[in-house]
Length: 358
Image (cartoon, rainbow, N blue to C red; front, side, top):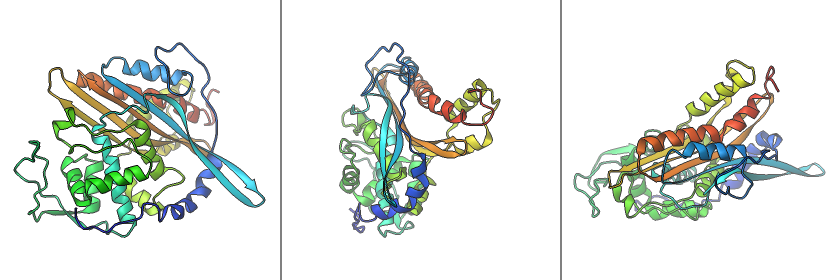
């Protein structure tokens, strides 16, 4: 433990909501996918739809356990005279094994990131120096991911946050874990509703085979919803601060947009659509050279899908594979599944543009 100041995880939640309502309230919708084609497995909480079938088929080349979850932020309003009360829900659009416990690899670092940003919001300076010196001796598990308590090598907290989320630095993740304390980080996740998430191992250590970290897609997506959704636990400044320290070039989704634009007769996807296809995500991968090989791949995030002259639709998304025996096939399957997960939504967004062949 570092002696860093304690903070209330709820003290500024309501203040963070106020400036966001005016932006997002007009864009809510409640719709569902149509069609129920044949499906090889039972989908979660809804009849199988075209998206579910496409994602499942994309994941089929890889063995191991697998799952996905796509949720949409929907907003309806209730009026009492001049008072407008928003009702925000996250609706499951497509899912399989969304509540199954799995090892998320580096995707779990979103837990550390949210705790860090909340601490800054509560008064901790973002340039607080933290110890990033690594010990040359392994810890009790044989892992070399160990902070040297006597090191004088430091880095500003916000820089360590960036390195953890953009570069996926295991060393900076361990520095943040030691600085705040694992129990405090986990308490934040549980307080925000991610109650099936547990930190058991250090990042970059192969003891995940015997002592894995644990979470669900529902838990991880909930963190993105709590941070980047309408009712955010962060103020707008803190949301922006975290967003700037995460990955958000959605190359896969841009490729899908170009494909769907051709189908709609638009030629190339409109520049405004591609520029508006924004969000943030964290991926993770680990491969154990065991017998047989055990590979994990995970990607979880949030994305806005633009509409012409209307507010964008907002989605959280996640796909994982655990215990695959071919890391390359698993990586390709994750990419293919992510492409299919948002294809229908991207198509619908492009279909609002002038010139689309509706």
